[in-house]
Length: 282
Image (cartoon, rainbow, N blue to C red; front, side, top):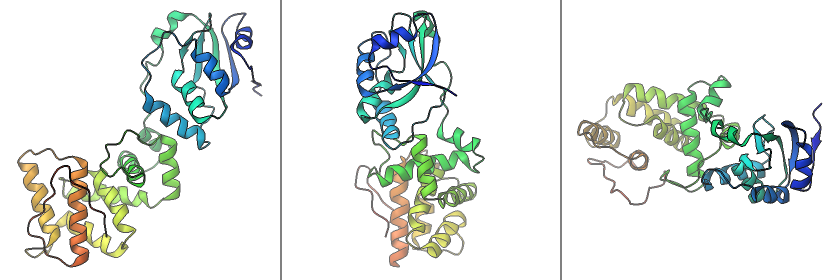
């Protein structure tokens, strides 16, 4: 069994590593984090977004003791873990962390050299099908739910937040599957947008949503003036002209098309001026 220590000050922490490099589990309180950050004298530029992501996970209780360690030099300097320390302060909640104390300061040059595990990597480890598309859809649905309809906000969901969203909405797996299926037949709209819109439209009318995405995929038996035909024509034309469209523009196209279908309106030409408000699906 691992013993968790709870030093109140950096002086007490120094005593733990007095006899050389030592690895222990320590409860890092906001107060201890503040003291440690006074020793954060030689580190990378702080990334506020990373701090915010970590703090949300801590606040939500999604912070786990996963073996990644806060690393301190023999003289007490913080070599690795400044973002986690700032997140503890921002969340105002103590968390248990592995702490390695007493390292050679030169060891900092070899830290964080591995590639970060992405949400798609984690989903694949969980044997989720369509892991890459599912991760992309989860991130965008999370953004949409948080008011970022252009997917350009400063915040993006953590892996834990994506997992929580999937648990709350398991039907997103079906949206990712449909996105891949449509993309394979009609490769002019990104899977991330297709899956996000499928999730939004399915919540409004599941039967009409199924018909809508089948027609986006195959364009079968669509008369002149049908909104889906206008959508397919528009994105195909822009793709052939090598126009690079942003995801929010694709979202606007799909939502405008869906709304026209729902209202029974003809749509001969699909338009959306860049920078204008994204419509809401009805």
